Each structure stands twice: as structure tokens, then as C-alpha cells.
Image (tube, rainbow, N blue to C red):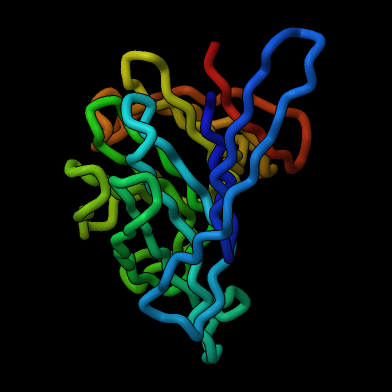
Length: 223
């Protein structure tokens, strides 16, 4: 019997299926919806991402964007004012802790949980102290109970970052990156970085893969 977790903006489904043979169709049992209470129940929450500890399926961490309405004027206000919220459970979804990471705009949450319980979160964010949209990351050494508060940036001009983890806990990150060549023409690259400790990425990975498309998305998967 395996457990399937489907995480949505409004619900989590706990499902199980059993496959008795190659010719028998799986039996899917869908459990009841389990709402997660937010500390801001009147604000919209969007784009949830869920990660599960590979060594403990009761340990799950989800990150989502909280749209901080109403909007306000300013040069960055083409983006909806928002921040990142994080939900953590250690009992399979019965109880959740919530942590908020404040910023001017948040987008594209992506999580990985290492076998030792350390959690790494990447996102795209706008901050008062940084110019432009930055690819930033936060870490938790206690499984998602508490999070680093400092802003750790890998730079700007990134889009659509994704992560995956190998069996030893090394976390790999890819992102779309726009850079200008020597002639001043903007070129697109696949940016590749990695984290050995689940706390930080390499400061100068020097891994930029050229791409002929003007804009693209990518998702990394490890075999």
C-alpha cells in the first residue's frame, strides 16, 4: 500500500492504491479533504509546492505565494505585492506550522528535503535592498520549524528555477538565465548549481549551458 499526497491551494488528498498484478487495475481510495488553516485567511494563496522527506513520509513541507492585497504604486508594482508562506507537518498532515518570509514580491517556490531533514527553498523575489528580481534561497536546519532570515541571492535575470536531489542528499538547481554577449545581445542559458549541505549553493559554479531559444523553461531530474 502506497500513500499519494496531492497538495492544492484548498486541500490535501491522502490516497492509497494497491496493484496486485500487471493485469489488475490499481484501486485508488481517495480520503477526505483536509484544509490547512492560514494565519491570513482573507488573503489569496497560490502556486503551492509540496516536498516530502524521502526518509519519513510524515514529514512534509509546502511553500506558497500569499497575494498581499491591496496593490500599491511604484516602479515594481507591475508585480502583485506578495510574500512566501511555508507550511510544515511532522505527523502526515494532521497539524501544520506556518512561517512567513516577507518581501515585496514572491514567485516560483521550489523545495527539497534532505534525508537528514534539512530543507532548502528557492524562489524569485523582489526586495527593498536588492535591485530587480532575484533568485534567492532560504534554508531550515530543523525540518521547517525555523528558517534563515537573511537574503541569500544567486543574482538576477533568472526565471523558472527547479531543483532535484540525489540519494546522498546533494541538491541540484537549474534556472533560465538571460545574459548579454560581447555584442550586447541578450542570450538565454541554462544555469546549473548545487548544494552539498542543504544550506547553501556554490558561489561561483561556472556552469552555464547555452540555449538557442530566446525564452524557455526546464525541469531537472536525476537518474
